[in-house]
Length: 113
Length: 110
Image (cartoon, rainbow over the protein chains, first blue to last red):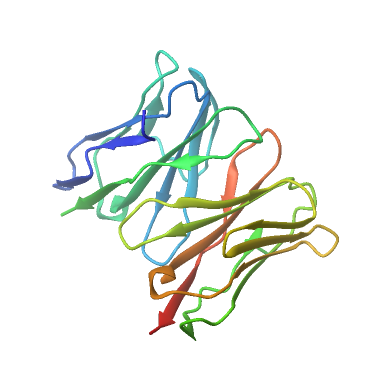
């Protein structure tokens, strides 16, 4: 296991389409985080999981966004009815437990046209 | 006031110089402090992770935390062109999400 894996790396979609991203955390990492990053900004928190439980969702996360981590391992982030403003880098991170180092994947770059 | 403030730069320094990057924060309850390096179109890479006030050194990198002033720093010695990247400070409570600064763009001039 070499790190946090995110797929796809790039996604181009038409406005109004649904997209789903996948994150595979480092093995045995209980905490999994989703962030969104736009050009020139730091990562903005979206949501995080402790095993399969979703502990917090940001107010940034509209009803069009949903995330799950069904078996406490990989996680998916779905965006329904995409808008141009959804274009960003979506980052996933994992950590063993609270208070430990968090490691990021390479991100999924979404472009909505 | 944002929870974490970081000057976005860009910061340009000559190769071999000592680089100083800084962040301030407003929440005195933050306990864990991190510095990430991010190259263009890549995910953030963890550089330094500290828990308490004081200094932590790793090779050419030194992280400094001053909880009384709510101020953290990252020093890079003998800077190299390969250090050119965006540096993100981040922090968290013990049982909570990680909050990031906007990042500082650093250019090391050969």
